[in-house]
Structures are given as C-alpha cells and as structure tokens.
Amino acid sequence: GDSVTQMEGPVTLSEEAFLTINCTYTATGYPSLFWYVQYPGEGLQLLLKATKADDKGSNKGFEATYRKETTSFHLEKGSVQVSDSAVYFCALSDRKAAGNKLTFGGGTRVLVKP
Amino acid sequence: AAGVIQSPRHLIKEKRETATLKCYPIPRHDTVYWYQQGPGQDPQFLISFYEKMQSDKGSIPDRFSAQQFSDYHSELNMSSLELGDSALYFCASSLDVSGNSPLHFGNGTRLTVT
Image (cartoon, rainbow over the protein chains, first blue to last red):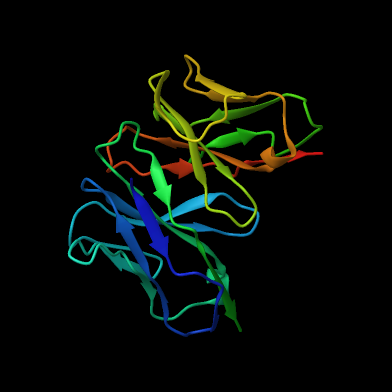
C-alpha cells in the first residue's frame, strides 16, 4: 500500500537557519504530493503541493520538488522564523484511489528559537 | 475565504456514550473526508463521501458511522465510546476527487472520553 516516511523530530533550529525535512514515499500509482502544517491547537493547513514529477511547490518561503527518481519530496526553507514552529506533515494522494484520500507521514515537529 | 467548519470544537463524553460530530465543507466542495488524529500521531483516514455517497473507507470502527447530507454537510456518529476514541477528529473537503484537488481541513473536534 501507499506510505510516506519523513524524518522524525523534533528539529530545533535558531532563527534564520536553513530547514530541511526529508520525505520519501511509496505508491503504486502516480501520486500528488503535499506538505501540510499544523500549528498548536489548530487544524492542518495546506502549505504546498506538486502533482507531477519535477514540479516544484512553493509557498511562504518553503519549497519542495517532486523527485520521481528518488521518490522524495523534501521540504526546505532558507531562513526560518519563530513563527514557523509547528508540526509538518508530508502526504500523498494516489489518484488511482477513489475519493482522493491522503496518506500522511508521521509528522515532524519543528521548533525555531529566537 | 470560507473554510471548513466543524462543531463542536470540544466534546467530553463518558465511556459507552454516543457522540455526533458535524462538518460543513467549503461551498461548492462536494467531497468530505474524516480523519482521526491521536496524541502525537499523524492523521488516520476514516471515511470519505463524494456526492453524498461513501467513496472510500479506511480504519473506521464498526461502532462509527457517517453520512453526507443533501446540503453536503457530513456527520460522524460514534457509539459505545471507548477511552481509546479520545482524539482530534478532522473533517476535510475538496473540490473534486481528482488527485490535483487539495484537501482543506477544519480545525477539528477534540473528543475526550472519560
């Protein structure tokens, strides 16, 4: 079945540091890939997405490139802020499956210190 | 912009009681998904509906049932509650069932079973 593996946290960084969260996936079809962010006490917010190989999703300074050859979708940000402290989830949607459900990775907690 | 509305935000029930969670999708979104997120866990897919019909089923216990109504809102009914049902329950909606249409999540209902 489909699965998503992402690096375990917590990841602790200083403000303005470079952030990378690794994400790899296994899917039988040609999935769409997503990064969702969850701030404390809130729901999941879509951060960015990519729907085909070599697509780059970007939003709020975050970027991720759909790499089919390495089945990866690593999230990067060049200079993090305290407000980026949250849990980040990598997810895939296998377009072969009915209903477009998401399969999530385990989440990576990021803590940015001033 | 309108978002996915879930009610109630918090719910406290005793073992063996029943609970009903409600979800109002974004206008024009005809697909609704339910997820369960345990403490420190990634969201687990429960069930989804497309045009008022069940479109996919995940790890939803037999004690739970759900439906989507003619106005596209959805309700998750939970009976014979157990302590292990304590979790954050998210509803999400999407514009269609294609893999290109991202899921938009509500802020969740936190269920506590005592």
